[in-house]
Amino acid sequence: MKVNLHPKEGLLINAFMLFFIIHSVQVGVGLAGLPRVVYLVAKHDAWISVFLAGMITSIVLIFMVQMLKQYDSADLYGIHVDVFGKWAGQSLNFIYMIYMTSTFFIILMNYIEIVQVWIFPTLPTWQLSLVLILIVIYAVYGGIRVIVGVAFFSVIGTVWLVIVLFVPLQFGDFTHLLPILNVNAKQLVMGAQSTTLSMLGFEIIMFVYPFVKEKHKSMLFVQIGNLFTTIIFTLATLISIVFFASNSLEKTIWPVLSMFKIVRLPNLERFEFIAVSFWMLIILPNMCFYLWAASKGFSRILGKRQKSGVWIIAIVTFAATFLIKSRYQMNTITDVVAKLGFYFAFCYPVLLAMIVFIKKWFKRRGDKHAETQ
Image (cartoon, rainbow, N blue to C red; front, side, top):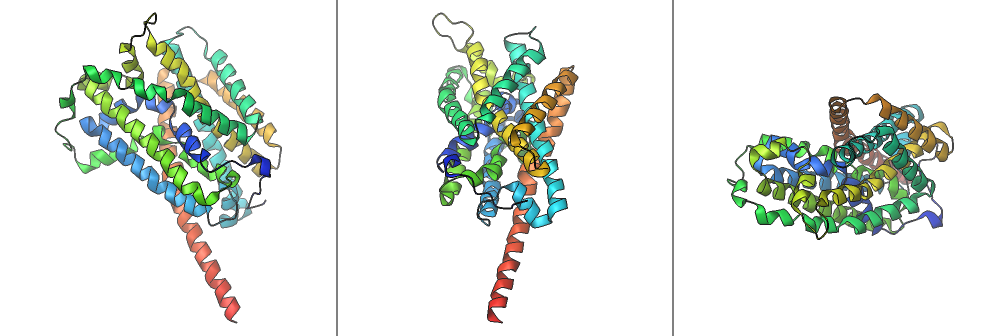
């Protein structure tokens, strides 16, 4: 198995597209319920926890990109084999492939739940899941450049929703934010950890990196993308705290979507229907990148065509949608994947980066020693 990938020139993307990639895969179904989840832990200082989570993500991204720079053009699957050998490396690759598939499934099911609650209560789960999965398969079949295009149009097509978020401020009460820093450091950190599901997605850089043209610019655009996400998440949380009374925010499952209820346009009473519909454009890049990364792992592990992996993973995911019978089951699975995501996206890449740095340092030291002989 090759450690370094050398994609064809036609598959390469410009470094500035990393801004759209990172931002689009971070913003997804998690944002809809983010303010409530963090508020339950950090109370009215939840917005500080969200900003702290963004800063922690920025640090993790530094480790990721610096690790990737140690190789000519390698992704996580190749680095695993280089560091741990064929069998242990492939085992880790398989575990990561399962994680990617699980996250793909969670995004799909959580969005379907939102659609069923807000727009079509009687819509069978399998119908919407089939449509979404087929759309994602079509995009992934087009290759990395098509998926990046989906991410680009997702950001451009939905950024206006951020402006609409400011509408509830006219009905808000800024005293809800006081007193600032009223909770202890432990609660702030735990609040930051509770944002895991919403912040996930940035780990995709470990699979996209080989396809970037100007790799020396990767760090800049990755950090800008994460900063933009952090600002939006912090604003959404802050506005939710200002708008809702404390007991209301604790009971509102999707506060961001609920705030859209007060938006009124001519001839349109239910603006939240528009928001939920546009949310599909927000989650598409998430699903596309996770399916692409998982199918890439399938290809690298088994030596099969990536397109075969796309279909197998998609069929398994579709079959799994029939196993979810209640919201309690969905919440349980979502919590499990969120906890796994904390280790797979935040903790493990930092540990792996340090192992790579140490290995490369010993290698360079050995090479210098050999030259002096």
